[in-house]
Length: 448
Image 1 (spheres, one colour):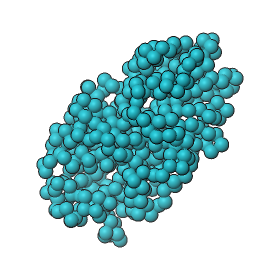
Image 2: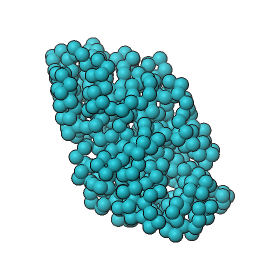
Image 3: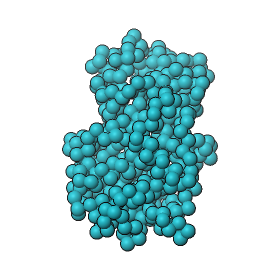
Image 4: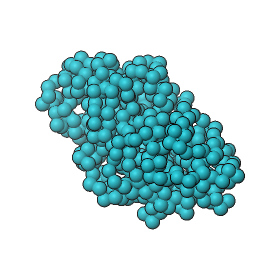
């Protein structure tokens, strides 16, 4: 299930925190969550000194690591549509910590965890840099996990401060080399996504005889160049190629590109731009009577039920996409995998809130699962990092992870040469009748 706010760049108000957690920090600043309320002495803290943490069956903590969690403040978008809400990632993280303490998983190897949080404006690179500086210099974190759309902040933490980062989003392939060895991502790197997309579409025969038009964001040029090279290698021609210089919400080119595609007789449009630009493009196409075929990779935040429901439905009904997440499994009637079941049970027990496991999928449900995945990868990295973990031993331990099951994505693997995790793909199909994506079949290894 891959659900995050759509109208954002391409991200999302946090709901009110549970009674055991103080409200989250302001944008681009980090702060430690408060201890449990006196009325709930059995509830865990989300932070604090190790002396505040309950003793578990795995022993008393000898050391406490400060872990940063950066997540987007998308309250401005939830004003427009409350379906864009991702809930409160701090409560989601606290529910996982409570379960780990209850089960005696923490302390792990004598190490306990203290979480500090940083909200950021996902449309502002400056705000992401501010969150990076706050976590590194003010909070002195050992490692950081991040929600989507923190790529600028993640590279800052890795390159400037040498702090290990586990980011939800994929980055340009060259960013991993510049940030080595500190940067890891749940998703495949951007070039891998588009190379797999080219191979997936070719295998389906979806590009045969088509005049292909590509509309792409200049910030993704490295990946788009790899995509175009993959198309040529697979025997396809590109009829029209137009970049967008959009920053944030939309671009002036969103309408102009329609005229170019029509002039070039494009009958298959591939939109490698932010969700807002996709919405603008399709609205303009509908107004002008232009109805190209469409194919979607899992790009920006386009592939969510909330996002796609905002597109002109006459143009997207029946469209297929290539997700790497568990998008559409609820609509398909798939059983939740054990990781998702555990995640949801822990959150509901901790928060007293019910997670809506229904289609269309909500942004809050998706973010709850994303948070669990980030926490699980963090814990797995600590398992083999030693009794006195260092950033270097933590990185080496992460590089040992192979075929690791996740709640919201396909299985994840890292290695010393590959810090971009999930690369399996499947097909999903959009249906306007349910306003939902439906997963089609099982995950397969990429052929590109």
